[in-house]
Each structure stands twice: as C-alpha cells, then as structure tokens.
Length: 558
Image (cartoon, rainbow, N blue to C red; front, side, top):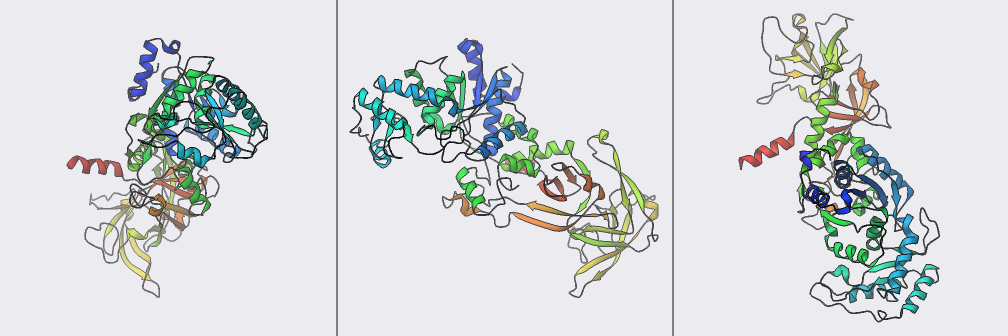
C-alpha cells in the first residue's frame, strides 16, 4: 500500500481492516460507475479520486463501468466525454466496462428469482405501484398480482423480454416485504418495458434493468470488493445486499460503503438543472467556463493536479456538507503559482505617452518568466515611448490611499523606469484618453540611483509591440452561497452578470505564442487560460488574491 497521510479516512480504515482479516483474500477492486446521460462535474471528481485513489493506495485495480441501463437518456457522446475526463484528471481505468455487457446474465438471474418465488410480474401502472408502497409510518399494500404462480410469472417475463407488451404495461418486481420500514425493500421494480434503441445493444432488448437491480450484480460479476457510493445510496444498501444474497454469485459478495458527496458554495451539480442552463442558452454549452463540469473547469484552466489534491485533502466523511468554492480556488492558485509563466496584459487600456522619450528608440528588458522557478529563465520585453496601462491605474483626481499614477506622482513601470505623470488629453465628452508623463533615464530597471522610493509598481505593454486579445472575466454563476435555499429552486439565484467579455485588450507580444489550453499569469491581474479553440481568447481561471485565506482568518477571529 502506498503511504499517504491524507488517505487516513474512514473508508481506508474499513479496507485496511478487511485486509487484516483476510476478507477478499486481501484483494482490493473498486469501480467508478457513472450513468452516461451527461457530462461529469466537480462532484464526480471526488468519487473518481476516491474510487481510483483507493485502488492505488492498496495496490488494487479500479474499472470504469458505464451504468447504461436507460436507453432514453444515454448517448455515445457522453460515454466518450466520461472516458476523456477521467484520463484528463489523471487516472487510467483497468478496464472500460458497461452494465449493458451483463444484460444476458442479469436476465438469467431475474428468471432465477422468479423460479425461487422471489420475483413477480406486476400489471399495475407506476402510479398505483407508487401509491401502494405507502410511506414512512404508513403501511404498504400488496399488489393483487403478487401471488401469481411461478409458471405465470415466467411466461409473462419471457413475453415482456420478447417485446409483446407496450411500454408501462408491466414491470418485474422483487418479492420482499411490503411492510418493511426501509422503503427500498417494499417490492422494488427490477425491470421495466422500454421499446427504445440502446446506444450499444440497439433493438436487442425491450426490457431494461433498474439501477438497483443492475448495480450490485454488475459489481459481483466484475469481482468488485468495495463498492463505494455517495451517501444517498445508504438506504439502498439493504436492497443491494438482499439481491446478492439470493443469487449464486461467481465470487465473494461485494461490500457497499457510502460517503458524503462533494458540494460547493455558489454551485449547482444537478444534471437536470445544468442541462436546462445549456438548453435555455444561459451558458454557451457544457464546457462554458462558468459551468462546474470537468471539461468546463479544464477549459477555464483548472489544473487536474489541483482538483486531485483538494479531493484527497478533504478526505471522506459520513456527513454531508458544502465546501467553500474559495477553498478549491486556493488549491488551483497554489498549483498555478508554481507552474504558470508570467506575462503582462492590459485589459482596459489607456494610452501613456512618455514625452521625453527619444523618438524612434526601443528598449528591451529581461523579465523573469516565473520567479518561483528560476529554471523557466527570462524573456525580452520591448519598451517604447508609447505604452498601454490599465485605466484603473490612473486617477486625475486621486481618492484617499490611491498610490498609482496621477498628475505629479511618480510610479514604477514593472522592470523598466520610474515615470511621473504631467498632464492628460481628453475627448469631447471629457474622458481621459491619454496620459502624458516623463521618465527618468537613470532609473532603468525600475530603481532610482538616489534611492528614492515609490509606492506603486504598474504593469504595461508597449503600444507598438502589443497584440490585440479578448479576455473573459468570470464571477459566480449563482449569487447565493447555497443556491435555491431561499426559494427551493436553485436557478432562481442565477447571476445575470457572471461573465464580462473584454474585446479590446492589449497583450504582451509573447502571449501570441501561448499554446492553446496553457495557463499564464497576467501580472497583477490573475491566472488566465488560453482558449483551445479561439486564438487570443483568454479565460480568467482565478484571481491572485487568496480569498480562502481571508475567509479562514475571519473565521478564526470569531
């Protein structure tokens, strides 16, 4: 087993005890079983890290199994995206399997349960079945079809299998206990009729297994030892075990373990609601950088290593909680600080003219690519008498504690010279469109020979050498920390100003050579990912300020 202090959580403790007791012969096998009816999101990342990480830590294996039992909602597109996202996150399944691989075996076992008197065909409609199940503290009512003979049930099941009956006309149910306090054991549905083509099996089947019928049996067929699920399946565990206990399994009965799913503030991970955002055009698609899908986070520039590290660090618990999105961003920022190349970019440009600059002269300065990693070396940055600076870095009438550029004030241009603003040029509406300044030739490199100090260092881009670019700035997609808490509908808390698109940015020339998908730090502004499809479009990944550190500091002061 790989030593990993962060892995000391309750699931690791359970597996460790099983190994010590010789259960499963000391073997550990897990699986990640998503339904291919949408794209993976950040909540799935924790399940992936738990399933694959557990297998790695105990020198076992983890398979990817696509839970493809619902032909109405599943598509090959989603299968392909799931495989791609898992590989991007840094894991390689031992095998890629499908629940549909086991349709024949599942059906054989269904007939076996019928023959044992433990399953029956029910002609009731789904509304009647639901009503007769009762509720907590309310007794269930046995179906009028519950005591059919084995022969009649087998005949009806085989005719269901042959496609003889219309959708919704019959189901196969397990015969357990309609008075059981666990609602999952009140004669659950095992098969429903669906005359629909499956993305893998085509029209070979007219009945499809439910999740609960397919899941545990698929685990057993594959030889899974520890079936790790999120906490909402806690009440399903008794049914999971009941099915397995009734069948002639090919190997040991797997053990189901549940843990709390991963939820974040300002985030929604419901596939249904995310699909509505896409279908209604609120976002530009499943990979819109505002979305919580893995491919959206990837496009936004989140490093897979940061997501893995975060999921490992928080571990697994049996208590649902909502993690602060700022905590995840802190891991992203920490990773990028060590790896991202530094560049200069002006997002809201204002012309700066050095009136005493020699006409036609161009200087070049050596600037570190990443001060955190000297091995990244340096680059040359061109400097001329006409520059672009940020509009927010100049104030004609500075407010209190404003230390950036204003008339008569001296500031440092990053790695270049000290300059002093002298006057401004305005347009017909009175807006400042140009700042004039003088530079101190003796301050090359940004330091004055007489040792005088300035209170601000500003980034810049040479106007003659700049390239144009577009930058997307992002705010939270949902304004509320817990979307839907107030109204019950999370989409009521959508942020109408979650994206600001800046189309007139001026970028350092080196940014033109940034690889698609690469993340760089725009000095003083944050980390930005170069879009993998649109040249010179950069998405802000995270800002430079560690909001999580500030949150922890405030909490500690209480």
